[in-house]
Length: 111
Image (cartoon, rainbow, N blue to C red; front, side, top):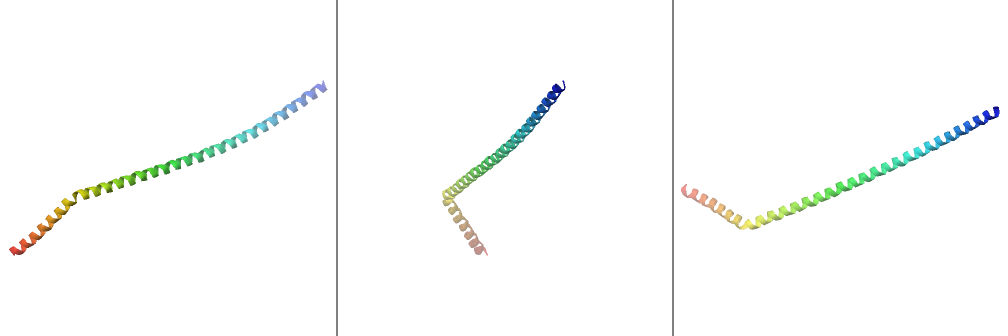
């Protein structure tokens, strides 16, 4: 009977040792899995940041191209308007000069 009790106690110790080793191994596996997950999350964040910054830069470049195109178009339209109205502007300037000169002569003549 004593021998059976010793065998049972020995078996229980072996079971306890096996359970302890299994717990330690499980803790190691869990720690490694958490470390791997943390690394993957950090890598995903880094990639997301790169993608975001690349998108911002692309949007900025696109906005600059649109802005430059609009400015160029406005300059071309402004030059077109000046060119098409050049004769009218020159005629208007000549009329203004003529009126100023006539007013000066009229004032000198009536003084």
